[in-house]
Image (cartoon, rainbow, N blue to C red; front, side, top):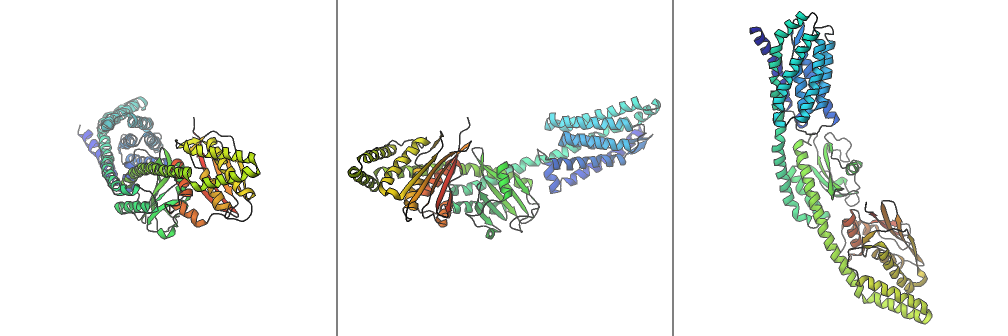
Length: 553
């Protein structure tokens, strides 16, 4: 009995050392962050497997030799790793440490039983990780560890040659090995204690995210360059970041903090890394950044922003020091990104209502605009004398144009009705300007609803601000192209060409309230579909297009 007690006490020495090593690892931020995760990537699983395999192998070497058998804590490391971190860690630790135990003493009495029991222990530990409730894992670990050690004893009795030697070994080591599995429960409780800090961290970071949301809420009522910069500045100050940025799917909308001189907002396209994050919808973390545009940036996190399930942009947080993207920061940033996504979606809905009101006002103005009506009537009067048939056609065009405006109630309308409105408008303008204006229709047969009064303003812009301001004959091409899952609508003219400054003002929202024509269409398309107009100045003229995704049925 005294011998058994001595072996048991000697067993607790390496077990205590293992427990101490794990305790000190929990104080290292990188390992602590791994221990607190719920889902592990392949790299992290490799690290954990290597760590517990190392503990198991060291446990073998620190064992006590009893009649050719090594009394050690290998089983404790296998069970702890598998229960805490899953099947991959449990099985890999069991197989590697078991094979090692076999190879260092191939002809030993207990080598084969230890190999078999180690592999089975890894499988059992992985099963407990998957099936056992978290609060009972430590108890399950102790019981399973004891059973696996008991299995080792049974295998020794079966496989040992001579049998009497196996009986002698089991009689001396069974009790100490089985009782030493209590250490499995202690290790599981230690790591679960570290994991339990996640709840405290989550609560603290959730409060921080809500505090930031309360501070930024007033600035979401009207999203523009200035308000987004203010939002980024609030976030940067509250989380003590060195820089914060918000993007859409194409460009950087706001950037504040260190390195702002590197960015030309309004024209700055997102990086390849941000584009990859938006396309994948997965968070990107870099704790040793070396290829950033700003060489002072050493840590960054890029979190997708979503609206209605679709990624519409990203929140980016930067630090000048490495290893700053910790688990608490990730928790807070993810919660904050969700709040920002919700606030931006609500803001867009409000802006859509506002823009719809502006569109309705513009439609009302078109209905009662005497200038357009007088010009149209003058064109009809002129045609009556010269070409009565043409005059009758123009009357039909004008009546159709006015009826469309008067009966316009729905925010969305069939594209063919919108195109008929465009044709009525074009026929009237062609009658006014004669050979100076040519219009080409490149229309595919598509069936889709689009926002009302969205093509005609673009055609009007092309004629009035493009063709009529140039000399000679001008051409406007109206395109509606079926591209499979989407429809591309384009307006191209051969006029004077839009100024680059105007394009930038439209993209950045720096447009006077009394000039809402092209900007109005851009905002409506952007708010409804996520991306606004694409505007390009050509060598001669202007090209404008936007894309509408078809509904998937």
